[in-house]
Image 1: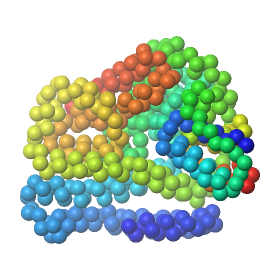
Image 2: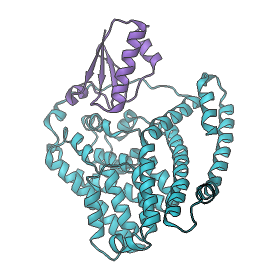
Image 3: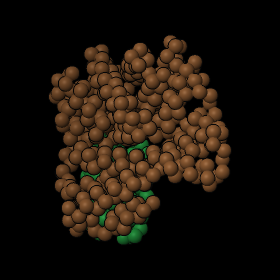
Image 4: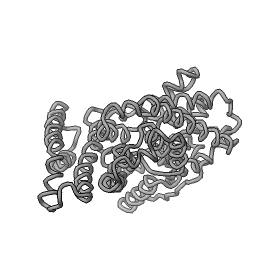
Length: 356
Length: 77
């Protein structure tokens, strides 16, 4: 792609030598090219499918191929933009700053703040344990720590970017709102339950040296570089999930009859919400893989609440994460954690099936 | 010189170890690299994220794959 090679060329030079206004100018130009390519995608997908491949219009395979050829570049381009933007925002936040911000905060305000910071603080589930220890030993309340640990994986830039791109801003906003709601209340409830005794003993005995790394001074150009690094790292990791997800979605789109999902995942069946949570919790995928599938399911008559519940339980709770957290949490606390978050997801699922 | 890479075994952690090994063999520095995967030991350094790099008991970087130039500066090359 053209804009990629441009960025690469510009990345190769010493970036701090480039004046800031010039970087912004290049940025604006690239945005314009991005937008041109993006608006051309539907025409491009249908031309390849029906003219180049000569597939009959209206056939199942045609619908699938067109869906795949349209959604893959669309999702990739949106991801590119969102990950880049969030990468820049994240350069303003570090786990250290977030912790300093959260320690000593009162209970409820602390939960709200922790959930919000969970969105913008750089986080990877492999860092969940040291982060947990760092927070708890620094006097961040347990419930507040959980609000952070729930929000960080669930409400992330990939999920929001994909939802916005594939299902519109309303669904993205609903996801953001309900995700924060679950993180805040689940954390608050865990805090109220006074489960501090169910953290593994060695954690509380750890005399974690409070480490103060000196603050790095970052210029705007450095932040642009970290946005670009985020793109390379995250897209490099998730692209395969995106393509598999879209391929499955394309299959559903072309071959599953209209309205079939209405009977299984529709509003009428009360058991569909708990069933999607039960199926979703042990499943391990990231937002990038699950959202294209969700889009296709919605198109075939699945109810929004049910689909939302499925998506959240896949992204927020996963078996590998529980195995990691088991090192610091006793089984009862893990069970409470899963129970509280899963109940929150259930409530959200039923709520949306009722409203919409 | 004693270099420790703290990390439970995520992709970035192995990358960090590899890049440090590369720098050592490029510069011929006199250093050993050890990978620390035990959570308790990692926690005792007070770091928040992995991978982290500790050189002679001093934490040099936290939660990211360090750049080659940074590593060279740490080991004094």
